[in-house]
Image 1: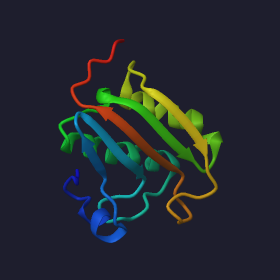
Image 2 (image 1 turned 180 degrees about the vertical axis):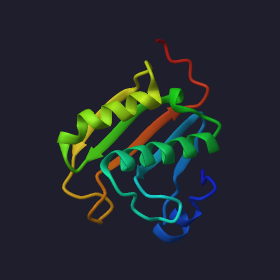
Image 3 (image 1 turned 90 degrees about the vertical axis):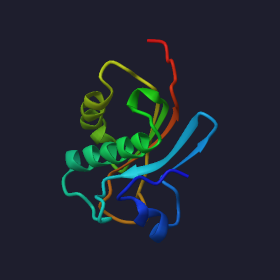
Length: 130
C-alpha cells in the first residue's frame, strides 16, 4: 500500500489506499482536485492541476514518475473540459503519451463540485518505447 505524506486522511477517513503496488506495477486510485486538507480546490484548471499534483505525489512515494504511467483513465463531469484537460496534461507529460481513456460522468466522489478524476497504472522503471 502506498500512502504519501498528506494523504493519510484518505486512507483513514475515506477508506482506500492512494495506490497499491503488485510486483513492478503500481495501481493508483483516482485522484481528484482536493488539497491535503481534503478540501475542493476552486477553479476548473486549478482542480485539474491539483489532481495531477496528487497523482505525482503518489507516484513519487512509490519511486515512480509520470513517464512510468502506461495507462491513464480520466472521468470528466463536463466533456467540454477536454481541451483544457489536454493542455494541463501536456504540461505534465511533455511529448510522452500513455494509453488514455476519457469517460463522461454525472458526478464524482459522490460530491458536487468535483470535475475531474485521474486513475493511472504505472510500471516502475518501465522502458516505454517512444
